[in-house]
Image 1 (cartoon, rainbow, N blue to C red):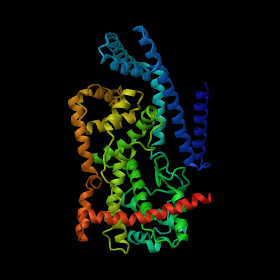
Image 2: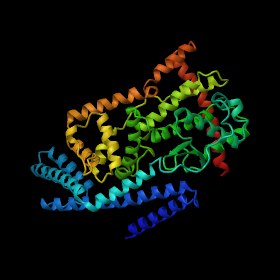
Image 3: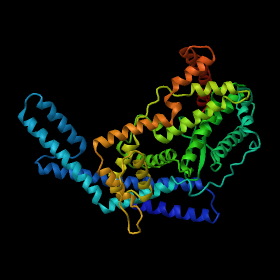
Image 4: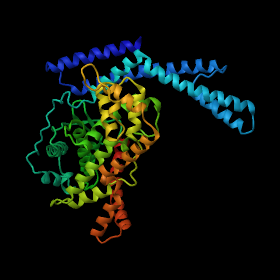
Length: 478
């Protein structure tokens, strides 16, 4: 009852705020976005509670059918492990019980999957969750009203870049640094033919992220903690060659996310990545964090997801291209760009798994189902015979993707996984060819690859230590 009350109250707040926003009496789109995200969390919490209760009930009832009493998946798995261990010592009872518990496990899974398909309230609740989350991730819903203009917009892009040089950047006032960041974002957006993105500088609870992109409102948040670090480096008359280029790289990275979210290109590669971005948002919130609420890494596997691979690759390529311009800090940009190429980049996640898990969880909306269908098609996992139509002779993407997933087999999946891996290395060239760049630039300076790499590491280790020292001093003062 309390959960229902919270959902109703939050929904009412959102409706009132959106109404005020449309009447131009409330311009706080950031707050509206937060409320929408919070509502999706409330819905997901209720879904999770119902699913857990449903599964526990099925486990208890099924185990009792076999004259056993098991209360949870963990207990059932422990029973299987225990019986399996005892069976190694030729225990007939253990062997008998092992088969029983395996049967229970199989039946529980089947009954649970059937329940997910047929529980109308649960499906309607999930449908509402996906609708709310789709609104939060819709970059075309509203554009934040804050101006994206900068006093440096009139400067050529090359002149904007030169202001990041170590002998210029730390002479700028902090407000000028922010203006410069906005100007660079505008230049990149103009190049990519997307709307200019307002940059908002907000405090962040975590220092692990320098910036983030919000699809709702279509804006970029820059972690103001880093601006404080820059301010403190200024006081030391620093000539650091790291933090400003991290900032530059982050701006391009986050603008790329807006390109993914708003790009209307018919190019299938970009469509595949844009779809993956939406799919991942729903997967992470609906399934991943529910199954693994306490991951060791605050961003488990996040950095190797398709839209992140694309954003890292885009910023890498832009920085390398920048370093070839005839500007005074070309060498600084070059050193940072090659140093910043991540070692041993591995893609740990599969968009195929995310799509299959979401479909099998049921309750999807037509729009997210369409994204899944297009990506399944891209990976050769669809067929005309799986397509179903609604009463308006339009594709029913919900039923269609369920048909596609139901008809998956080992051969199809293996081929799709190989194709997925091929697309990663083909699309994100800078991430999977680091050695090629190291060899190319080492040869440019008549150095061995290892020697060149060590030189870069030593250079930026010094810069990084200076930043750490400033952070430590700041923390001690607090």
